[in-house]
Amino acid sequence: MKTTTIFLMIAVFLPLNAVLGQPGKGGLILGGTANFTNQFIEEHDDIINFSVYPQIGYFVSPTFALGGTFGLNHFKSGGFNDTDFSLGPFARYYIGRFPKNKVWFFVHAKTEYLSNEGDYRLSGGNGISVFLSPSTAFEALGVLQYTGGEIDKSQLGLQFGFQVYLNKKE
Image (cartoon, rainbow, N blue to C red; front, side, top):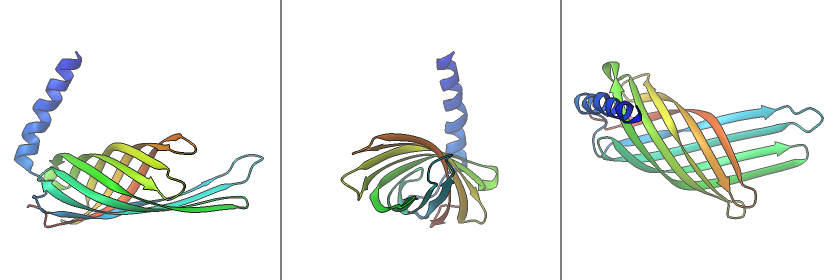
């Protein structure tokens, strides 16, 4: 059953990918994501977290982009404040482009080096780009993150952002 499902997925997505096309080789992605959380914990200090992650990518093929991201994260809980920075590469593979090129699906992976005491973060997930204009898209990305270093932790989340696609193939 698993083999049949995989075969059907390949049979559906590969022809669509070839027919509908993707951004052209040499195109750029500019944009990023941001998030804000405020956690209210009974009998404990509230936790406030704000993060912004601008990124730039380059299409090395019509469906595969490589790039870099810079992150700024601010955390506050009670009297404790911490701001850290991150820097790292990402890879993104586009699976398909659908109705009149308005919706694109992708797989995204990223690794980051964090500024506080040599921590690192690995993340990956699936996303969707919904185009608001021919070159600007709103994105949603389901992400699984693992942070390693002094304290290891895993997170499952949803990220939102905007991307501008330059020199994309029409």
